[in-house]
Amino acid sequence: MKIILGPASTNLGKQIAQTIKAETVPVAFKTFPDGENYLRLEGQMQNEDVAIVQTTSPPQDTRLIQLALMADSAKRNGAKEITAVVPYLAYARQDKIFLQGEPISAETIARMLKAAGVDQLITVNVHQDKVFSQFSFPARSVSAVPLLAEYFVKKGYTKAFALSPDKGAVHIAEDARKVLGGECGYLEKNRDRYTGQVGMESKTLDVKGKTVIIFDDIISSGGTIVAAVKIVKEMNPQQICIACVHPLLIGEAERVILQTGVKEIVGTDSVPSSVSKVSLAPILSRELAG
Ligand code: R5P
Image (cartoon, rainbow, N blue to C red):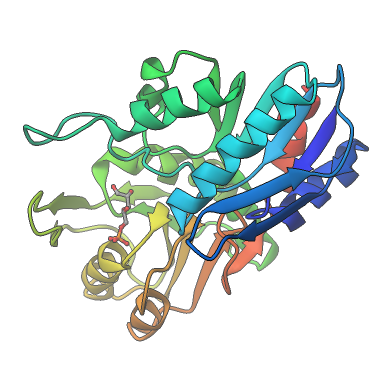
């Protein structure tokens, strides 16, 4: 297998290649003056299986087009099976029609990738696994939550309380608890479909004097985490840390979260950022090596 180093995930791609001892295919890329993307695969892949490592965090449209162009180019250059390794899968949250007149964006993206030549897709902590039922090719999501929890175990936070800010994501807190060895729980979140405003119901949890780690799949604006921290602080924990798989951290999100007094924000390199302290290379290498 050869690893194509997508422009959005060059470092991660190199780490994966090193781990599974695969040859890499560098990618030359540029943007034309009118904004269109150009790229060229700089390696041979005739009759080889290839994995294209390319996250699709912002600017997601550019990165999705680059991914499609790389798949097309790999196919034209004789690649056998093309696996798209997409740590953060853009548009996955729009996996159904919430309001009349909307598209199912996740399905549109899947069709585009398939048409470009992608044979299978591996991602990390996709918002809902059921999104793949709309894909016409094999796709799966692996969880980085154990890796995030291990990071905190190494820091000595064994038995910390793992909290999900949303009942729908309680499985994330449960996965973290299995590694941390303490308790877990969830808050109840609601979001206004028109304004995007986050509301959170107050709740009593047994966190007094404990370290609480709030686990979420994505931090985008930071609104969810800020609302969760506000509620948890009222319950007098010893300290609060934040863990997320995909630290999109749009705009002032990081600053606004740190201003609440949390001890630390930890994310993965699915979205390279100042909080990306946990690498996905081990789990993605394992998935590719089969
Ligand atoms: C939503 O259901 C996700 O799990 C995240 O909680 C959400 O995407 C975070 O977004 P934000 O940081 O803008 O509140």
